[in-house]
Length: 70
Image (cartoon, rainbow, N blue to C red; front, top):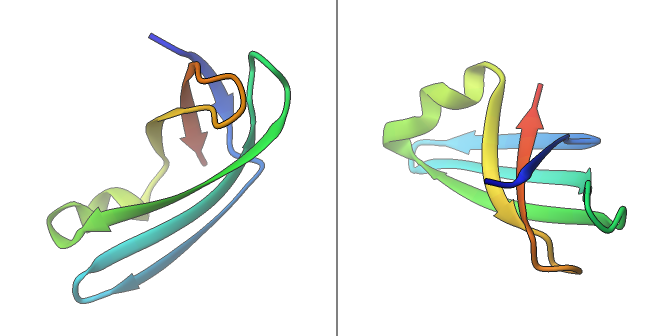
């Protein structure tokens, strides 16, 4: 299980096929700024209406990170 961090910025774009989430965060391990672009299928679109979290891997140090979007 990875350490948690809070997204420094995130933007959600939605259409009939699903949603794209563009988010920025600072890795809690290596402290480098990172970004992710995530596709959310139409079946899970309701999850984007509230706070959500996503499990990712830091592009710099390769460690597991849980990013909270709120």
